[in-house]
Image 1 (cartoon, helix red, strand yellow):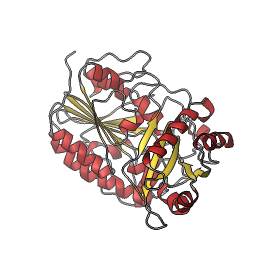
Image 2 (image 1 turned 60 degrees about the vertical axis):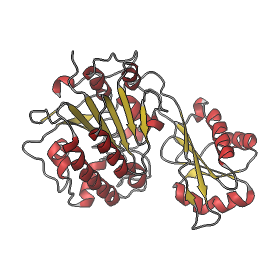
Image 3 (image 1 turned 90 degrees about the vertical axis):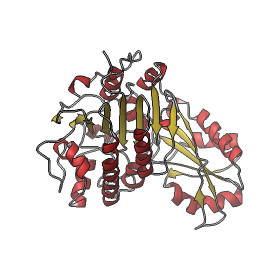
Length: 396
């Protein structure tokens, strides 16, 4: 079949869940609804572009009315894989079925056996070892790290082990070496985190610490070939924006763009849309999750959605007749729920092209992998062996 769309844009609104999965109680998540609860706290949201694509038709939102003739094709996706983290969600989108959730250490920090092994191999005493904000832990512990030569190790609600290092006193080479040690240690099944992250910073005293741009992620590679690999092998462009490079450890990508914020990520995507390529542009907008979801700030989250909508209004006119836009998410992170963890939720699926003749509701799908399967089908690319997902292209 000749390809239907020359360019496909997939934008992941990181953590924007739309209601509990049938099995969410097994994950400790009862009655969760990220977008629904945000809309209730906001009272009224100004999201005209999402509204006209069909977001309020897809999911009830306080203060945002469904419209009679939405432009997009819209529905909800369930996660088939076990877990509720970033890597599992994105990997499933591109065809991988993950049967073993990535381990998180949010509640109690890392086990003492791992910390002891890290101390022995780095020659530094570990401090921190808890779930924390990266900026707050510097205020709390960076002076001690500098003065005593200790090592700040911490985690978050994601499956990550993060190590801070002062660029002036520890040096980047040493920090990266310690992270390589941590990556090797955390390949053991019982300690296997999705990413080890080097978090360099400068400054010498509280109030002056600033993280630098020399962050480096040591990610697990996907457990098998994904749709991204299949597209790349067929000579198509596979362009990433934001955290996508880290999530897939660069596998299957032909070009990557780092973003400092979700707004910048959208600006980069708009710029890519105004240029020329043939294939996929895959964007992750992490601020929803990192700045607002984990910090349990529903109003901040709602305002971030409004900023996204404004940029969406700039992207839509840049789309061409043979472009396809897909908006989705990778898990939930209900900012009105207890704790700071992700929430096990369905995610939105909104597809739009200027060539579509009207919108419509789509049946709820059993897996995020319909996204990768649809893209592969569009470009006439064979799905890699073992990949899950069936194409929705006929409905788009």
